[in-house]
Image (tube, helix red, strand yellow):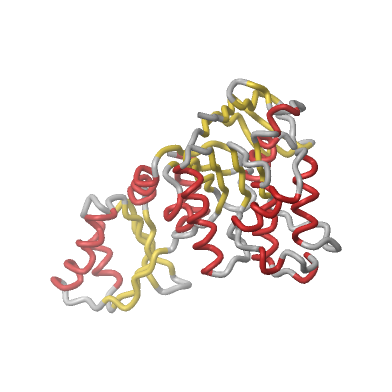
Length: 303
């Protein structure tokens, strides 16, 4: 039961705080690290992998410090987001080189290439690989020593749908075997399909933690803003503002529409068409104005 413990950990670069007093535990199974671009996910993963020292706090693997502790690196595999690789090597040569760093050889490299279904291209230079193929050969190099912990930074970037499904199935299988698998993503649907547990990071802070249903409920229950155009905006606003499901209504003269803040999502979605029908108002446009991941994460931070 391999567990990574992050305890009141911060990391800054000069005056920039990339990770701010984060505490979390990552255990066996598949954990999704969810957050918008620039949230601090990569910095956090690099501290878990031993590439970066915490500025304050600790990052440990089964109670052992990870930073500058060679013994724990045998238990960790990492698939970084950046694409910088030795393009003059073939895929097989690249994985063999990583195997040799672990005191292993060609047999283990071949097994890892087979695991990610890259045998067909193993003798081609990496410079000829697509982005999805590069991701898979990086995955093979991370798996060559069969680590108990696998850290993946945006692993699905550049993969086609078939490659994505294959990798998801591989990660599910590893999680079911009892390995500790953590992958980062800024795409909610990827995390929903794969992770049994989710950690949310926003602007370097730990915003939420739990299973996907809990996080989804937080997102559904947050205030929603809608842009609504109708045949009679004034009458619609007057009818809606009296209901407790709405917290405020503004007139956006530039858009020639209403901006409505709904605090009870379920009630509001039933109320709007009912009120329009009762008052003979035609709804021309109903669209969410705050459905970006950044707005969702911002709400979670403030919650």
